[in-house]
Length: 118
Length: 109
Image 1 (cartoon, rainbow over the protein chains, first blue to last red):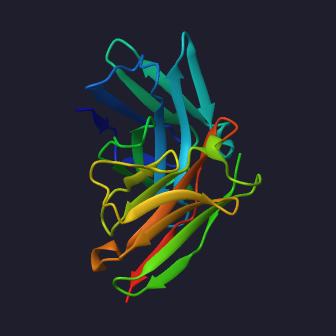
Image 2: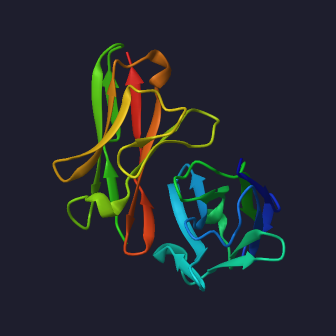
């Protein structure tokens, strides 16, 4: 049974960096079929895919155009987890953030509401 | 990257049939778009119903079916139940990126 457990702050100040981690159990971040995604949801922007990482003999990273200049997704192979960093946040980045595995999107993290405020 | 379009809202009677569609700004949706469908009820996280166009999960009722229809991805609900009232989102893959539709609010009335 795959589980994704998210951790991270619920409040980030404007212009600072949002950081969040998704710990994987029941699967390996080196999976040759899965990719590891970050997704967010807000009333104003709906569901928005942010990016993903996956391993196919080397690491690949793909990001949404809307956040490409500000986002980094990093695998942490020692701890079988992956992280999200979103720089220079504004109140528009206020959302519930999810991690998810995209073999079939069966497995999601629990979601963390992140509020961006000065 | 693709812009994904869904009907904003649909209404269906209990026991009826309704089809939700999902279009891509890049052209006809094909199998390579790996269409996914999610159901979301108030206060809950999205839950996957259909993956890779037609595949149901073990928890997905048989009345939900996915297909390609007229250049779009489609989700058909046959024999709609009151508990199917929810928001439905599609997700398409194109050029190395996933894109969500804006969602369809399904009312069962």
